[in-house]
Amino acid sequence: MPPVALEPATRQSRLAEAARRWDALQAAQPDLAPAVDLQRQLLGLVIDLMDVFEGGRLPRLSLPPKYLAAKLARGVPALSGEPIPLPVPVLTPTLIRLCEELAAGGAGETAEHIKAALVETRMEAGSLLSASLARDQQTIRVGAAHRGLAPDLVWLVAELAVSPFAYALQEALFSGTGDSALGAALSAWSHGYCPACGSWPAIAEVVTGRRALRCSFCCFAWDTGSHGCVYCGEAGDKFITPSSDAAVVESRKHRRVEICNTCRSYMKAVDVHDLSPFPLVAIADLETMDLDVAAIERGYSRPPLRDFSKFASR
Image (tube, rainbow, N blue to C red; front, side):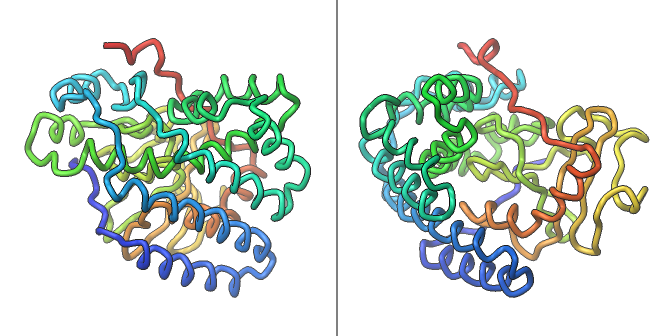
C-alpha cells in the first residue's frame, strides 16, 4: 500500500492540538499531571527547533530516488548508513535545554550530570547526535555507561534533540514521490520498522479502518499491507488481538494492544480521526501508557532497534 499521508501542520496548529490533548489527558488521568507538564516543556523545545528546519536549513543529500528505491527493496531504511552532515551548532542548544527541563521535571542530578558532560565536552554533542540519527543504541549505551551517565536518559535527550532534523529529512526524501520508482518502493514496504530511519513504531493509529504505523523517531506513517506482528511477522494463532482474546490485555473500544506469543512483544493501536502530526505521536504514546503497563505486567515488551550497519553500504 502507498505511504499514509499526513495533513499539513503549522507551528500554531501543532501547539493548539497539543494543548487540547494535554488538557484532556490531565483531566481524564490527574495522576499523569507531572508527566504531562514535563512533556509540555520537552515537546515545546522540539517544536521550536522544528521551525528552523522547516525554513529550509537542510544539507544537500546525494541520495538519488533510484538509489533509495533499490535500498528499500533490500529492506534497508533510507537513512541507514548514510554520511549525513548534522547541524550540530543548531541542535546543541536544544540538547542542553532538554537536559535542564528534565532536571527540573524530576530527573534531577541524573539529567544535570548529562548536561555537565556535554558542556564540559566529556561527551561530544556531535558524536552523540550522530549516533542517535543512526539509531545506534549500543554506541550510546556504552558511551553513557563509560561516563557514569544514565544510558536511557542520554538516549532520550539525544533522540528528542535530533528528531526534528530526522523528520525534516524524511519529509524531503519522501514527499511528492508519487508514481516514481521510490514511491513504488515505499508502497511495497512490508516491514514493521520505519522505511526512513529504521525505528520501530511507537503506536498504530487507525483512521477509518486504515492502520498506520507511526515511527517513534521521525514520525513517518506507513502500512505494512498485512495484519500481523510488526516485529517478527507472526500472523498465525500466536498473534493475538483483543478481538481474538480480549482477556489477555487491557482493551477498550477505540484503544487496544496487539500481542505476539512468538517474540513476546506488543503493539498499541488506537482509532483516531486524524493522524498525529510531528511531534505529537509522543502525546499519543503518553495517552496510552496504561496499555504499556498492562502488556508489560503480562510479560510482553518491545524489542531493541535493528542493526542495519551490515546492509546499508552502497
